[in-house]
Length: 93
Image 1 (cartoon, rainbow, N blue to C red):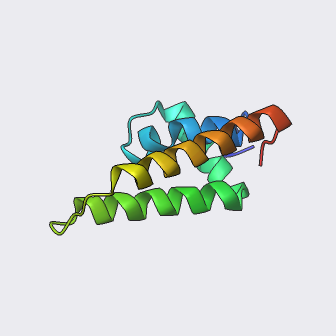
Image 2 (image 1 turned 45 degrees about the horizontal axis):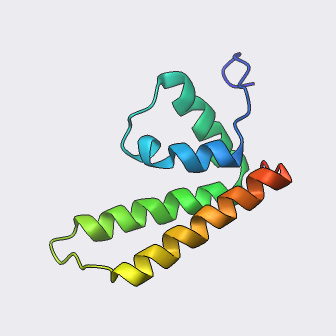
């Protein structure tokens, strides 16, 4: 409960799906509150949030760099496998 309002817990899987929207402030006020509540309780998702913000800051720097295609594909593939495995395990934190 936050400010007298019951917060419906959001899963890590859903956080991972919406993290970009959250960082860009492109979520509803209700979802934003649920995500913030989750970040306050889940150190893994908070670390993901911090890392996402760091990547955005680096990319936004005028000295941006290109990631080799192969590296980008490996990172994306690894993240997708992790998300799928956690979803199958029912992991929420």
